[in-house]
Image 1 (cartoon, rainbow, N blue to C red):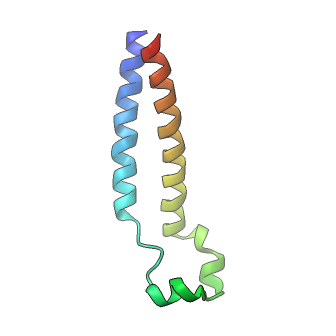
Image 2 (tube, helix red, strand yellow; image 1 turned 30 degrees about the vertical axis):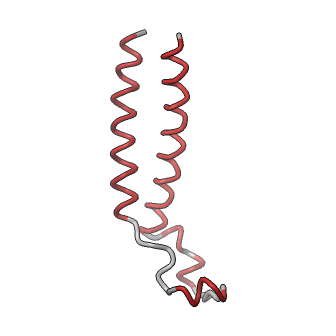
Amino acid sequence: MEMVKNILYIIYAIICVAIIIITLVQKSENEAGPSEAITGSTTNNFYDKNKGRTGEGLLKRWTIILGIIFALLTLALSVLTLV
């Protein structure tokens, strides 16, 4: 059981570092400024419709996936430390 916990701790550390790096690489979503945030106006162009297929969309998707893995590993490690 100790071996499984140690392996999960190593994977947990790798996931933590990966989330930090991917988050720092991403651009801010609100680049237009505070006036657009207040008025809520957005442009509806081809880029906005296909944002998920770009590199930014890929980084966002991986952030969500790694966040879910992070949460599941946190639960698994907390259960294993109670056993």
